[in-house]
Length: 465
Ligand code: FAD
Ligand code: NAI
Image (cartoon, rainbow, N blue to C red; front, side, top):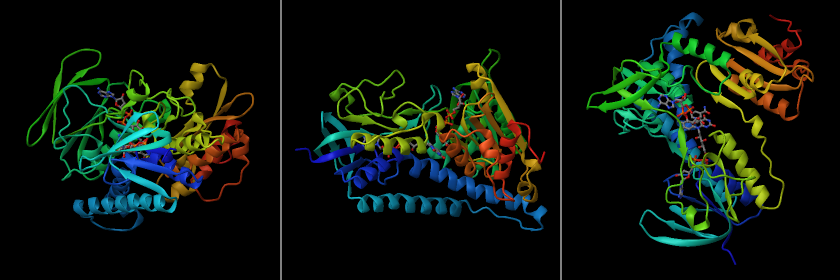
């Protein structure tokens, strides 16, 4: 008889939520995690520490540049050691919290690196080098992802850092070069810009944040530029040379032309992430990842019987909430229930200032599909709460089917939009029309009224702009 109903390899948002849901359903569950703490990329070196620094640096920037207009005169002094310490304390509390939840739900944490050793077998090697094999009726792979490398740019975590290094720089750089105008580059670039660094972002494409609605991306780029971030678009990095004091980066126009050398104290490489399956023993159960290294699944089942996969290691957006929803759905499915994830309704958020949040289709996607749609837009300059708070950058945009009025997407840039997008997710999950959002009473004065007014705008009955 198998020792466990399910062994989950990886203790990130995918793995820990799967383990906890398995425990709740009365399954005998274990989670194998090789890190010293649970929580994976998200809690240790991803979502949580980055949000801690985004929040702290936003407060610093507000105190330095925006308090005066509210009649509060202060001269903030940066204590980077304390800023990093409070980040570490919050992260430690969160990772300990997962340990507590494991105990509460009777999940075993098997410490060490897991390797599938054949059907139903997981060999775990601990930090002491000793291995033991555990048996399970089901194995869930939740091993996540790692930063993608770039030829010629060797990450040393001293001068050339990836996101992990950029979360713990020992000083505020005078200058920081970011490779990649994606979410990591812009979030962490914003952190160091607000703390005083000169930030230049080098991006291969002719736009920032691919995947974001183009109109929103343009407004976003304009706003970041106003904050002092310099963009070098349509540019490719061909090499980097680090010294003890800085880095020289060779950059060429994508269209061809003369190369130039950019110099900075530090370089952040943030050109995407790739699935992580090193040493996992996929071959022992006949799983071959796709060309980019992702494990292919059908309703979280891999090609090997009894082996499942969720989170960043599988196709789809590399987001913690996607991993979490897959975790619950996967465990419910393997327990004989009906697991479900609405893949078209996974929201995205960039936690900069202004924030950007969206769900559903962009205008570009709807055009490419040839779908007839209507647009409702409302600027935060016309939202009373944003106005009194002096946070009027951005707008809310709602896209709806031209015939049925079903909401097809929402694209928000502005204050606190990360907290607003969930409302659209619920509405879209229930296949709401724009009129449903427009006729739903929203509290006044809140920024969420901008979303309501944008929804009213789809049928042309916005009352406040
Ligand atoms: P991971 O969190 O990567 O966890 C995988 C775990 O598996 C790791 O702990 C690893 O040690 C362990 N592991 C791997 N192989 C083995 C093995 N063989 N044996 C044992 N253990 C193993 N997403 C958001 O939604 N919102 C955000 O704000 C956000 N911010 C981010 C900021 C940064 C800087 C980064 C890098 C990422 C951010 N993400 C964010 C993405 C998010 O972190 C990932 O999508 C999420 O962590 C994926 O969860 P996962 O469980 O699939 O994998
Ligand atoms: P990304 O995919 O968001 O952006 C990478 C950027 O680098 C793209 O704009 C791409 O065109 C560019 N690029 C690729 N190769 C390049 C090259 N050689 N030279 C210059 N530019 C190049 O990847 P990023 O920012 O590394 O983040 C990885 C993932 O982590 C995200 O896709 C997201 O899933 C997750 N994440 C989510 C966050 C959130 O939800 N707020 C925060 C941070 C990360």
